[in-house]
Amino acid sequence: MASQPQFQRPVSSDWRARAERLSDADMEAFWMPFTSNREFKSKRRLLVGAAGCYYTAEDGSKKYDTLSGLWCASFGHGRPEIAEAIAEAARTLDYAPPFQYAHPLGFELANRVKQFTPAGLDHVFFTNSGSESADTAIKIAKGYWARRGRPEKNRLIGRVKGYHGVNVGGTSVGGIEPNRAGFGELMATGHLPHTLLEENRFSRGCPEHGADLADVLEQQIQDAGAETIAAVMVEPMSGSAGVIVPPKGYLERLAAICRKHDILLIFDEVLTGFGRLGATFGAELFGVTPDILTMAKNITNGSVPMGAVAVTDAIHDAFMETSPLEYDVEFRHGYTYSAHPLACAAGLAALDVMERDGLVARAAELAPYFEDQLHNLKGLKHIVDIRNLGLAGAFQIEALPGEPGKRPWQIAMAAWDRGLYVRFGGDTVQLGPPFIAEKADIDHICNVLADIIPSID
Ligand SMILES: Cc1ncc(COP(=O)(O)O)c(C=O)c1O
Image (cartoon, rainbow, N blue to C red; front, side):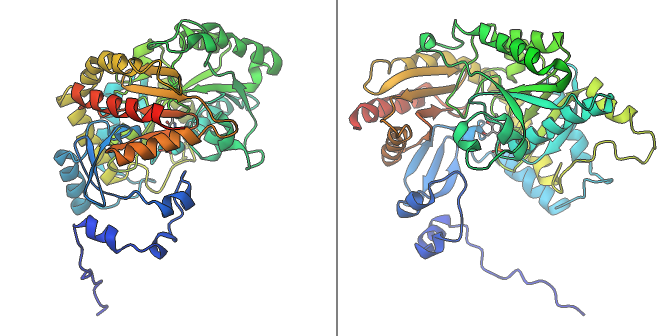
């Protein structure tokens, strides 16, 4: 008889001890993502636990989670219902092939997601991340027009400073220049201008100026021809580039132009989905329904990787109707881990928690207080703009010549030493507290940052 697999290795739940055992040499093998590896490995910041709004660092100190992980653990860490659901799924059906076979939780979660997406976006395709959702949406848009007999309608238009993850499609449609530089041409794409305007500095919520920037799309359509453009893809609010809030009327105008020219509109709601803006989706907040909506992050409260793409009947049916044979694969796309049982279990539990605890409403309730506290920091040395929407906010920090990222990095490192985990990116420090944050937490975050920001060089 073949020997049984051995699982006798002692498993310690003491992650602090495990962190302590990691020598400097042990740190070399892991090539960390989106990290200055050399800097990190010389001043490591290891997390060994999380509960509620706090992380625990390897020295046992608590760090307030000012970004809900990476905008993804918005319902608070360590939710026992989610942990239980994941464990139960692991015990029951650790893995199920999603190609040509399935399990019940995939259907349950698709129906659950459909309860929250805008009316008409009723078909849900599962991925494992925001990046995969972005690239899936791009392929759906291109495939849709090909299925409708218009394969030349194939080009994507994104926006400068947009972020759609790091896969080839999303990197191309995205407009954060350093993320694209250095890889040669990925996918030919057009870009609309971003909406960060000098005259909008220190706006509270949606700024007054800039709706007309949507009209640049008309120009690009004239230049390239609507018959060559498959879709426009934007985040309702650009998060990763530093909380760039759409000007009043901008998204409505963009949607109208897309409709007029028969161009699909894709909203990337990976970051904004499931409550960040104080509404379930940005689409709901702005009253603009896209043809395709991507999501990830909060869908499992960050506990298991998962993403999803919701599409209209018209798009879904285009794939079904143009696949004549009963056994045709209508969309030749999918991942080994699409609708993974653990992710589906986590998603069902997370959305239950979100709904049961009224967390979207709670985010909306806390948002005005968050806005006030953020804007109280106006006038502090180095702060050249403050932006916010819902429970998302950013301080733009005056760039040192040639080194826009230095001060935000210094601020975040000082904040770490003062008990805050803070996200820094480009020339901004970004905040996205958990929806369960208290007003006193917001005060604390802002007080610490008010001390730190002017104190750096
Ligand atoms: C709008 C948007 N799209 C896509 C992504 C990529 O998601 P992931 O890192 O899960 O691939 C992000 C991540 O922050 C995002 O904010």
